[in-house]
Length: 306
Ligand SMILES: O=C(O)CCC(=O)C(=O)O
Ligand SMILES: [Fe+2]
Image (tube, rainbow, N blue to C red; front, side):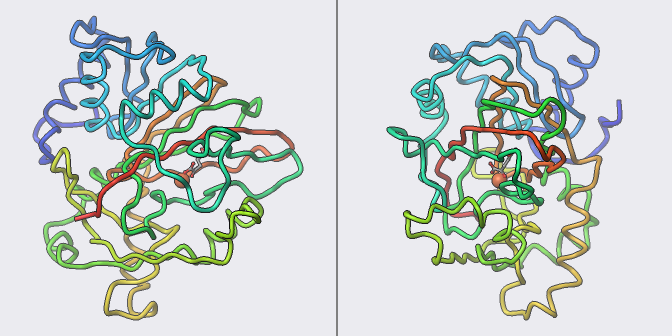
């Protein structure tokens, strides 16, 4: 067990430790209304044998919400869902939002198809980020349902920003605590990962968004503190220039995606993944040129980071 009971941590840590140790030892999971196992010590829970095409009971929904806060990434396998059912499930967890840059499915504006075609070389969101942190209220969660995946590759990595925060020294936590940072949709790298996907009719292509958020945020539901800068969107600290910010930001960008904070999701058609943008970052690996990959994406509204 890489996680030690002595480690300091966020309030849900003890529950996570209990969950992980029982799952690692494959003790029957009488407390959970589904079969599940962690994807890594720090983050992620794979859930099997739960059919989301029918509305989960109130008890199951409560457990899903609880393990979502503890594990940041939930992977539901073998879901056979229509867009209407995906939307219905999303509505049990939150309020679907409209993504400003890509048009939704016909009849389902809140479901964005994320497609990479065999001849394309750039993938959507292909760098470490938390979703749309350049908005004043970034989505609390994002949900992807895999419709078509390459024979191998196209995995998505996730990194716990609660674990990343906890691993910082006391001095660095103090230094970062009062800081805020500017997040911009126009940051060059992320623009590149979106450019051939922008809805030319939607009028969003010329618009750029900017928001200032705390560098360390406190989770509104769990109370956990998480690092909240990201390579995709964060350009500088508030009141500092980009040059002045670059050194410390680069340290944080490297630190926050260390392997021990990560898990890796390997998709299959029907895999539905929901992640908590307030507590983790993700990185869709672009290693499957020549193959088609299609995801149906829903984001859930979030509050102003604090
Ligand atoms: O395609 C993926 O696995 C994730 C893409 C992404 O960054 C997103 O949907 O927010
Ligand atoms: Fe993303």
